[in-house]
Amino acid sequence: MKIAVLVKQVPDMESKFKIIGDSKIDESQIAFKMNDFDEYAVEAALQLKEKFGGEVIIISAGPERASKEIRQAFAMGGDWGIQIQDEQVDAGDNFVVASALCKAVESLGGVDLVLTGVQAEDDQAAVTGVIIADMLGMPHCTNVVKIEVGGDGKSMTVNRELEGGLNEVLEMAMPAVLTIQSGINQPRYPTLPGIMKAKKKRLDVKKAADLGVAAVGEAGSKTKFVKMFFPVSDHKAEIIEGDPKSAAAKLVDKLRNEAKVI
Amino acid sequence: MARILVVAEQRNGKISDATLELCKAAKALASAMGASPAAAVFYKDDSLAKEVAQYIPEVFSVVDSKLDVYNADAYTAAAKAVVESQDVKGVLIPHTYDGTDYAAKLAMALGCGIVTNCNRCEAQGGAVVFTRNTYNGKIQEQRSVKTDKFVATFEKGAFEKEAAGGAGSVTAVTASIPDARRKFKQFVETMSGSVDITQAKVIVSGGRGTKEKDKYNDIIVNFAKKLGGEFAASRPVVDAGWTDAARQVGQSGKTVTPDLYIACGISGAIQHVAGMKGSKVIVAINKDPEAPIFNIATYGIVGDLFEVIPAIMEKL
Ligand SMILES: Cc1cc2nc3c(=O)[nH]c(=O)nc-3n(C[C@H](O)[C@H](O)[C@H](O)COP(=O)(O)OP(=O)(O)OC[C@H]3O[C@@H](n4cnc5c(N)ncnc54)[C@H](O)[C@@H]3O)c2cc1C
Ligand SMILES: Nc1ncnc2c1ncn2[C@@H]1O[C@H](COP(=O)(O)O)[C@@H](O)[C@H]1O
Image 1: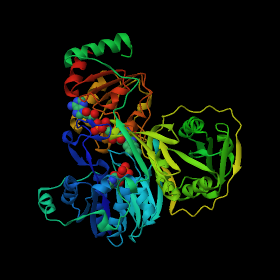
Image 2: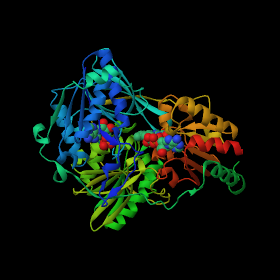
Image 3: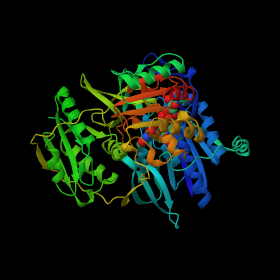
Image 4: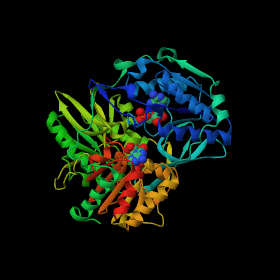
């Protein structure tokens, strides 16, 4: 089974965010990590490989620093990878990035599955997997929390998560694109030998032009960025100041005598 | 006149609240743009189209036995047929499990731009500017589309529900609905457990900030017991197996409305907030003063939960 997993490097959301000129984030303050949902996608692919054999190819679009996350996926057990390192791809919208990722998948010459995360924690778009499925002419399923591949290795039963603990159980043929939801498995930690091996695994670095992606950057995008800002809430919590002990005492007093809920 | 079209959402024959919220949004946006609001309803008969016509002046109904249960291929084909036959300028879709499953596919079929996860939209000199959540709710972004048409998805709760009372028209639209490439088998319940946190008056909820299973159990469970309430969790805690799925609060878990909800080490992602924002009093304990949870809490303490919670317990 040949499985492509799309992995995105995103900021650690506990980093200190600063916005420069209404338009971008000050990266000097940011720590980066693998998108949470993508870790589950890598694990799901590795479990299928362990059962059916084959290979797991990691694909990512992002600047040089994003190779760290590809290597992390290698250390977990990914076989090899493609990094699309092109400022003009990064400058595009989801449609541009998905077009480039799609071409990278096509360059593999046929896959059984493409796995993505449900959404990227930074742009929270939740569109990339669906767009790629459409471009590849494959069926897709979003928010997947269970995959059971049939004995023939060609069809599968999939659980799609819905609101309030409900799942839709459905059957679909492969090849297909699945967007993987957190909790589907427990992603493994890279082992020390895994980390050593990861350094030597093949990572092809490509530009959009190498993959035949013509429309990039703002020109290739179907949406236009306007600005970014910190949310202004019309409601803010009453912050109880002081060291833990005095804040705790004030809070208990408020809950007892003001809100009367304890 | 150009139309702003809501694609309705149903499960088991029930129109979702998110659909009624978008009816409200479509009316406001259409009026600001000099367009007219409309909805598209896809179902096995026209009963739901008639129902939605109480909320919006014009409803386009696609009826097909293949539209009984939601399916991406079927919804894309049906929505495309309505958009292309009815002078539709923009399509509004709920940012829900079903909505996010086909919205981008519809945008591809229409060749237009898509903006997802929005919470506001405004007409600005001919263009529509969408405001959306990014970076787990820490930053808002504004985006518009460069194409003539647009598809946009909106967070649940971004608008108030439109009230019933109107008598809109229902027009049948014919669409050729393809056989679904994914075959629906059944719906299954995955979170029924021994405990029902929805009945609790006091809930102490722990998030990823509780760090590990033993610490979650030690601090959150004991805090809840001391208050005579139930303990609950955000999704990452359940994903990691620190507690039961029946205790998960949020969009994919339980919706709770206790008198007191104490969120400890929970950032306040929209999917979590969806399940607890109806609580009477919300307390947030978080070491990050910029955590979005402080935007919905009644009282907040900025600090380390491992210091703050024991200090509170001493005072109880
Ligand atoms: C389709 C979908 C459905 C989802 N459904 C749900 C759902 O039902 N419920 C749900 O909860 N999530 C759900 N999520 C996930 C959601 O988007 C967030 O990822 C999740 O809610 C984050 O959980 P958290 O706040 O515990 O963790 P994080 O976002 O990682 O936040 C941890 C917080 O702990 C704080 N912290 C860390 N250490 C300490 C300390 N020592 N003291 C005090 N504070 C500390 C940090 O400042 C941070 O704010 C869903 C996501 C998707 C895409
Ligand atoms: N630049 C990227 N490189 C690799 N994968 C990506 C990239 N952007 C998005 N993806 C994949 O698409 C998923 C959904 O992202 P999004 O549609 O941006 O929310 C992510 O979880 C990744 O699996």
